[in-house]
Image 1 (tube, one colour):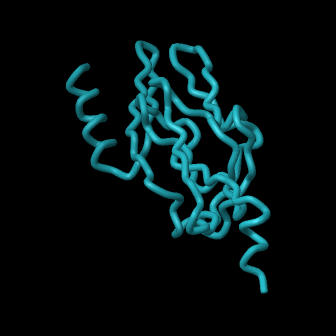
Image 2 (cartoon, rainbow, N blue to C red; image 1 turned 135 degrees about the vertical axis):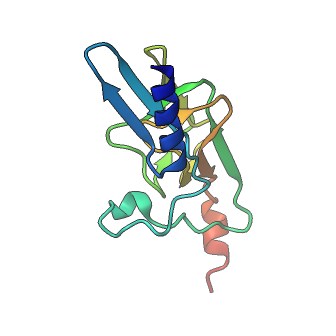
Amino acid sequence: MSDTVEKIVDLVARSRVRSVKIRTPDCSITVRVNRRRTAVQPEAPPSVTPESRAAPTPVHPTLELQTVRSRRVGVFHHLEPPVILGQTVAAGQTLGVIESMRILSDVRAERAGAVHEILIEDGAPVEYDQPLFVLAAQPSAREDNGDAG
C-alpha cells in the first residue's frame, strides 16, 4: 500500500495537478501540493472573474505596502464573497480563514488599506508566516489632489 501512495505522491509532484483524492472501501488518500503564487497570474483566462483577477492596483510612489501573513498552519479558505483586488479593507477586517484541526482562525488586516495582491487560492495549504495578501495603505486626499493642475 505504501508503495502505491509513494507513486501517487510522485505523480502529483511532477504534474500540474494541485490535489488528488482517492477513496476505496478500505481507505481514503488525499495528496495536496502547495504551489505558491508570488502574484496574481496575468495570463489568467478572461472567463475568470475580472474583478478578482485584474492587474494589481497601481502603487503610488509613497504608498506603503503591508503583507498579511499566516499565523497558523492549515488550509486557507476565502470568505463568501471573497475580497477582491482594489477592495478597501478596514483595520481588523477578516480577509479569510485558516482551518487547522477543524478549528477556524480568522486572517485579519492589521491596518486599513486596499487589497494590492492576493497570494493564496481557496483550499490551498498554508504554512506558518506564509504571505497571503498584500495591502496598500490609502494615500490621503491631500496627496491625491496635490498633483492636479
